[in-house]
Image 1 (cartoon, chains in turn brown, red):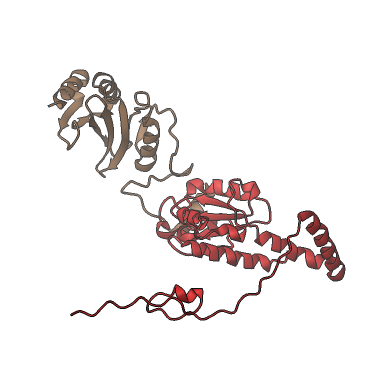
Image 2: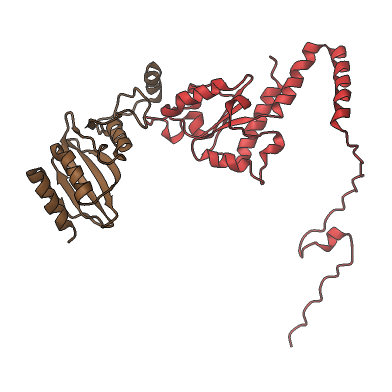
Length: 158
Length: 207
């Protein structure tokens, strides 16, 4: 019931790049959008709908495509809202949310290094959890575990 | 009619220990009394000249080279100051080894927070590649002579994360390790045992 105005406001702002609002348990819903509408959507969600707190950013490798999702929280509604966008499997990229929610900075660094999603205009896209110079993206389905000795040689050469 | 309750056990016989004996317990063996020895308190200003004199006599008798290394080893192994790495759950066991129950400080082990005050590095936890170069840096900041203890399976060989993408498979890939302590996590007794074995190593140290 409360999520009606979410769908209406977002549809008014980003038009047909808004792909729908699915019900999702214990949240205001799961909002699907096209990745090119990322920045106007983030501004709408934060400034017009009042979701001021970015709780987390994550990514999923679905092999055929990749999904990036944002979990935002509103103190007024006392509700979470999920924002989700599908990205192509080849060279997935989306606009960074760090200019809207500063909390996105580290979350996007983590998502980038683990799931290989490029965040455009990110202020500081470096490795967060993995050592500098690590080339693989370990949470991709195509990632192969190395034997420890192989990995050691690789790390030493970096 | 029911039997009257048994009278309480007489508490008069035997020593004080006998009086507190529980029902069904074997009687205590009387221990011979330990003779009371009066220990003379020695002030530092009296002790130091006396020790100086004794050491001087020993050096004159045995030669300096023969005496100085055992003395250093004796002092070093009885005042090991560990630099600890609270990287994972082993750090909890490490902390409890310094609690009142195990009290590792009676072996002269006092954890310090600066590598420049330490001569023993205890790696307790999972070392990731992200922290590896910091570990090497802190090892290099420790003054010689220095020792390393790998505590727990993760520090010894990577543990269950050996094949993981971000974990160093054993801290001996980074720094030389003297003593490995097995366990996941090792109990404080195991940690104390490892440190005592390291003290044995230091005792046999020649150079």
